[in-house]
Length: 114
Image 1 (spheres, rainbow, N blue to C red):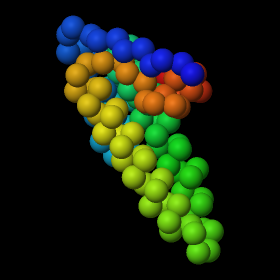
Image 2 (image 1 turned 90 degrees about the horizontal axis):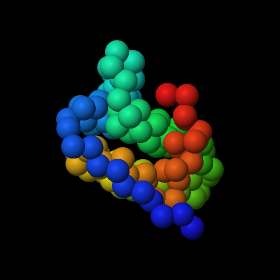
Image 3 (image 1 turned 180 degrees about the vertical axis):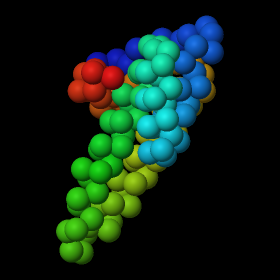
């Protein structure tokens, strides 16, 4: 199992973009636009994490259509995604490039075009 690496930036460069990326889908779109004007590695990192959380939520949302247990699965998934958002937001506030547990490194690979 890989250990998550943590990189801390000393300035506020990209920190605003990183924080905004976790604030709803509109915030994610705004962060992408802001980051395209002035690219920062911190902003790109957190945009990838946020896109990963969003896509994961949309894909796992398909489980809600399963009769009976779909609601229970979605409650569990919802709590996990909320925790992931909080972890990402805390790392963004700290100016850290800290990948989410288990899947964060994969998000960086899958969305490396950002």
